[in-house]
Length: 526
Ligand code: TRP
Ligand code: SF4
Image 1: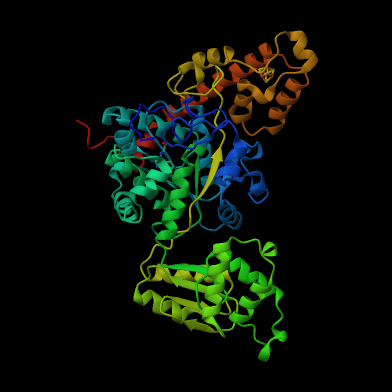
Image 2: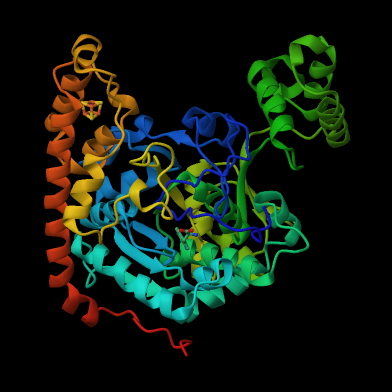
C-alpha cells in the first residue's frame, strides 16, 4: 500500500473499509488501507496481539467494553493495569483524524480515554490534523470543522479538559521536535516493510508516521510512565513501531547473560539449559566453565538439542573461545547509546558484585526487573527519556447497520454522533438483523445475536453499564423469546434518546471547549 491509491476510511475508531482485495481469511493490518478483520484469532496468532480476557482480572473496575469482550486484545497492558490499581502514574492517549463526522465507532475510543482518565490516568486526546492534511488531503477548513465536532463529543461524553490534555499535531511544537528526533532512528526500508511504502510514497506521509510515533510517546516526555493507546487493530503497526522506536532511544539494554560475551536469545536459552543441568561439583575446583558447557553440548545427540545448526556452531565457537572462563548467570547492562557520564553513573549505581567492560556492565546481584528500573533511573537523571514501551488495547470494529463493514462513506451503515435523533431512530429500524426468515422460525431456533448488528448496538452502546440488560437481550434473542421487530423498536428508541442527550451535552460543553487549551482554528487556514 503506497498510500497513493484512493484511500478508504479507517480511522482508529472505525471499522475498516472492505477493500475486497485480500482473500477472505487474509488478515493484513494497514492503517490507511483496506484491511478487514475477518478473524480476530489471527491477530493473536500472526501478530502477537494478546487476548484482553487474560488481563481482565488485573484491571480495577473494568469498563463494560472490557467486560463484554468489545475490547478484545492488547499489547503489554499489565503495567497500565497495575499502575491504575496502585494509584501510580499512568497515561492514556489516542488520536483522531478529522476527516468526517465522529460516529458511534469513535465513541468507543472516546469512552476508553475517559474511563482511563476517571481511573486516574493522565489523559490525552489529539487531533491528527497533519496526518489528515498530508495523508488524506483534507483542507484546513474541513479539518477545523471536524476537529471541533470530535472535541465536542469527547467533552460531552465526559472528558475533563482541566485534568487532561488536548492538542492538535500542527500546533504542538514538542511533538514535532520529538517526531524529528525519533525519525533519526527509523529508515525507509523499515517503513517499506511495515507499511508497504515505495518509491512513490510522498514524504509527508512518512512524516505523518513519525508524528504519530511522537504522539504516542508524548505523555512520557516529562517522565516515563505506563501509557496505553486505545485504538482499532488497524493501528497496530503504528503501535509496534512505536514500541520498537521507544526501545531504540534507550541508553542501556538490560539482558541476562552467562559469561562475558554476548549470546543471542536462542544461544542463551541453550546455555541456560546446560547451566541448569550441569552440576559444578563434577568439575575441577567446583567451577562450571565455558569449555565444559561446550563439551557437554557436543556430547548431546543433535536431535535432543532442538536448535538450528548455525546456532549450534556459533554458540560452540563462542564457548570454546572463552575457554576456562567460568559460566555464571548475571544481569547485563549493554551500553546502547549512553553518554560517558551516564555509563559512569550506572557503574556507580550498580550494587553488589559487578564487572565493567568497554561496552557493558555485568551485575551479579541484581534481578533483571530491578536492573531495568535502575537503567531507566540513570538514563532519566542523565538527560535521557527512559521511555517505557507504550501499551495498547484494541476494540472490535462494529458491523455496519446494513451488514458488511461500517463505513463513513455509507451513511446508512453507521450512526453519526451528529445524526438527527429521528434519523438515528430510522437507521436502527431499517438495520439488518441476525433474525430468522419468519417469526415462527425465530421462536423455534432463536435469533443469531452473535451476527446481529442490532445486538452489537446494545452491547457496545445502548445497554451502557448494565450488563444484565445486555445479557437479557442476548438470552432472549437466542432463546427465541425476542423478535426482531420489537427488539429493533426498543433499540431505535434508545438510540434516539442517546443522540438527543448526547447532542444536548454537546451544546452544554461548547463553553468548556472554548476555554480549553487547544487551538480551534488552524493557523494555516486561508
Ligand atoms: N492515525 C490515526 C488514525 O488514523 C490517528 C492518530 C494520530 C493516532 N496520532 C495518533 C491514533 C496517536 C492513536 C495514537 O485515526
Ligand atoms: Fe438481533 Fe434483536 Fe433480532 Fe436478536 S431479536 S436477531 S438481537 S434484532
